[in-house]
Image (cartoon, rainbow, N blue to C red; front, side, top):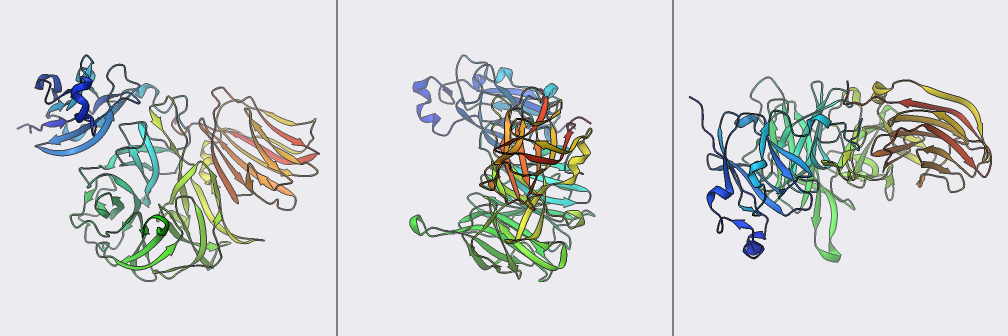
Length: 560
């Protein structure tokens, strides 16, 4: 017998109920049930909701059998929508649904234009919108911010991320989910964690790992358990677990595992001690006496945690991992950083981190925030993705992820430093090689390579010679090395034997600039709606030499 499930959606806006009557808004007190609800037989995959950016927010709840299973706010379009959000109704297909609006503007299309489809609305242009990143991950619809839960398991890289599927701005913090086998081609999966239904409120940032030894006892089949550790706002630090390769998660009934004033747990296994470690942003005091820090906890089973130490001077989204200096396994160090990506190098004994220098160092610059590295990445690689804080005006999505970088520790004249280089997998998208070697440039004699397209991997080695300024011009955007200031695009960078190496990744909405094989790395906004016809190297104040200039036009990762 076909199971009957009733799906209920309520749309409201916080304090809207207080002024609804004087503004003429229809609410439960001023409308008939027929005006506020619609019965729908769920037959397809997605229920499409019209969004108008800047419209009044309405509260939405999706209930089954009287229990809310989805809850969110949405800027419901009163008329012609800017774009369409969608609810994945595949788990409820074959059921009768009631779509109910708690408040609605009279004289508008309202629920009449909500429909259901087997592919999301706008799929015809999906991944080919004018500002859609072509080799960076971006979500199909809505907003993203922090990458979460980065973990590798059995051939798949899992990227979870802070996600608002129902709006262009920050709200409704879900954990979105995508997987990849090569860090280039991504498949977006259904949301992994849902606010207000799978957690107390928002599902804020956190980390992912694999409970290889089943220390928590969650494993039910042959697959190892993927753990999501996250901040359940209004509750504390929480864990959820998956027995199906991260496709669905179960919220542990014993949550919270840590209750404190803080957020964003990073959880990983510490082999020397045979225990789990949680590094989590923590606060004490208030006002002028507010202390921002990382707190370190340990656990044998992911459920019971003991506080061990704190590290002052760090804000949200902490990260900690071990790297070998110059690739020497006998010379390891630990690296700690937080959302601003400024880092310290030191020692960690599984309970306490001890920096080996004063202050902090910096690799990342520009529109970069809240990065995280993949737990358990193969070949011992430490691969990092950050939040690219770039607005996508006019698009049905907003913000993006930065291109994955591989992190290393290397000895420099200033001491041991962390380097961040674009991963080698970018070469999977190379179409051809355009190159010039040993060419002179002068103020009246630039060097140019003819190109076409909008996506590029550009690599140059520049001998500074007598130039005062030296750089590359890409569709009007200049990437300049200031020889007197020792700065690449505003980032401090000393030349090496009189030369500077630059790698530049150009995507539709962004540009990333890597100097001296990862000594500095900048993420910035970039706009070029037309094909880029040339890449130019220029010099000012004196002559210089281009040892090599390589330009690789790139294929889109979304078009196989």
